[in-house]
Image (tube, rainbow over all chains, first blue to last red; front, top):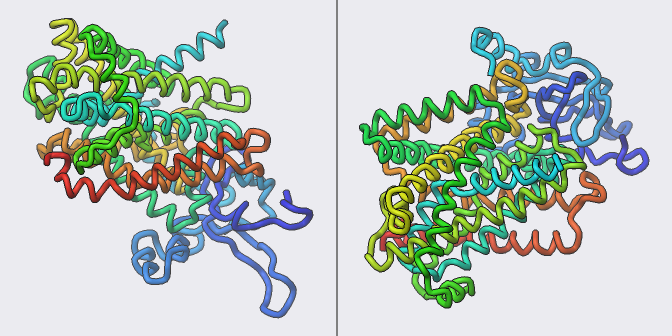
Length: 124
Length: 406
């Protein structure tokens, strides 16, 4: 999993990458990363992946963030952002493979909601 | 044997799928205004799409990544978002142009009011995308689009001055802004980005892996390369028929006149059928490309192979694209004008999608032994330079020439 011994370039390999659940379903992107640790203490460690449009505004240049917040949401955990603990990551390869189903991790809720609405549509 | 047949059929589909309304408009106008003197620009554009498509197909097969996945990874969030918005807007204008184009051709074939035809065209396309599986879509439109080959036969049949044709393949400069505008338009029409969004996502829809690299190379090099023959033929026929009569093909049907001139009514019918399926196929590709790009950027499930409920937001996205395009065309805006804007703005956004693909294609972490070699990298960077120059020149030339009208 590591790139160079025990090091991994998180921006190059993890940030913005596709999340895929244990069943092979695409279920969001690594929209932001949550690090653990105090300034001056132990080196920070990757704690969790944050996925969902709610964190998109934080990725924009500062002057655009208020607009981004209005368009994409303000980042309420469990609503427009899902926190995926790093322990749930199986592998970082061409995609980020997760150990559990998207539904159990709270991911791909938008697709699940929409699939219910399209229940009566003919199958393509 | 089965594999060879599969490759051959893929090439035929790529040939038929190469031409869209952009080529029909820009190449016919290029021939009418400048006779054979822009043939070299077709070659530049076609080699560009071959290089770009081959890389995206290879990245899809080896790293399993479609274009917008790579855009988001390599450009970062903000530049990726800008690219997404630009791509969605140009996709929408292009889709409106293609739907309008299908309606125009249907109107010529059946002589019914254009408003009715726009509705029928949009509905027919939606039903096909909904119910026909991915490879079926690719094949139906690709094979039937091959009737456009009537232009290749017409180009030869009309007995061109081969010396002048040959000279047209040598890059030349004519010092006018209008000529430069058509250089950009002809290159841009061949290099429209939606084709590679569709091509790379299609590779993943069809489950491409390392074993399919040969199919990718054949489709990209031979399919798109031979598709370029159709573009050359469109310019030649227009140079032989429209230029001497000083006809400016501002109307889509005018392009078909060249085939009629050579083969009478049969030629006209074949040309119109070819245009119908080439433009219809392009409409399908553009609508799906819009949905692919959006879903890939956001990380949603996507792909026709997942079915309606397996990838619901993706399905809804392409349906909404068709609905929006329908609204745009129903306002009565001319599909030919829409096409010119679509091609020019696609060219502007092109470097933003090309660069990340090039960066991944040369990255051994993702591509292993299949990363670009020295030849691939040199060609890749050379085309990046060409694309940047063309992108920078596009909008100023559009303004100076007032959309190619003066």
